[in-house]
Amino acid sequence: MKDFELPSKLYMLRKTFELDSHIRNQKSIENLTRHLLSSVRLEHQPDYNARLEKFWAREHAYYIILCERVGKKYSEYLPGREYSYVLLRDIILRIARKKQSSVLDGGCGSGVACALLAQKGGTATGVDITRSALRLAKAISGEYKTYVNLALGNLTDLPFQNRTFDVVFSLGVFEHFPPQTQEEVFKEFARVSKHRILLVVPNKSSPIYKAMAESEFKLVPPALVYPEEHRQFPVDFSHFSGHSGISMSESSAFHIVPPKVIPRKYLTKESWRFFRKVVQQALSIWDGKPITTWSSVENGCSCEEKARYGWFSYAIYEKSR
Image (cartoon, rainbow, N blue to C red):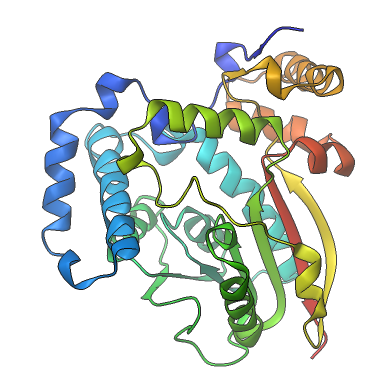
């Protein structure tokens, strides 16, 4: 069995580390990152928070130089990331059960999910511990021509009243917290949620996750990788069902689009056949637009296939009171 290689026209860039090195290493990006950080007092922050500020300032610099200044849309700049957030948005809209819903993105980062939700008529709020992330989120919401409420805050002590939001969600957050902190954050999510909570974390058994993680650590200097990305904690979705009045109603995964290459060491015969099948389907319905093409393919996958091969695992929780 050989490595699985994705046809180039079906590829969707998702993370900035996938950019060519001569693009990633532009001096202008370094200079702009320093400029964006000049108003953030890093010396007064814990080391982890300071590294988060640097990471998101750099992501903002990429966005300004490679997207804003050249007149690109975010969907052209990082189509694979928007694709993930479109799938996430659709899950949230389904479980919100009303168009004018209020949603909270805990650890919103770039705020793309909030912008996409606001486009659909809901009230979207993003909270993050870093000012640099919130600045990027504000810029992106401007591109999407939406208004997103953005708040600086700690997920273990959210700055919101009880039962404020119809849905509270997070993507790529819980795996960065040890179990005790996960518990504290979930309790806060439950406190400010009226009805539902959605947790999304990387599916570490997925060949997509394994291939992307290997590429990231191979291509990016450790200082530029998301802080503590190499040291993630397990997230037991079933554990949170033990909270009073909380039950898990659904779990699966999404984002079955493979990266450029999945090394054969991460593949079984079954997974290789699955990726070959979805690529053949994508090629057969290709409309020149990767996001809509892959959305159609993903919609046709079974829940079992998504749970096994999707990049991101998720769980939905219901509040009984």
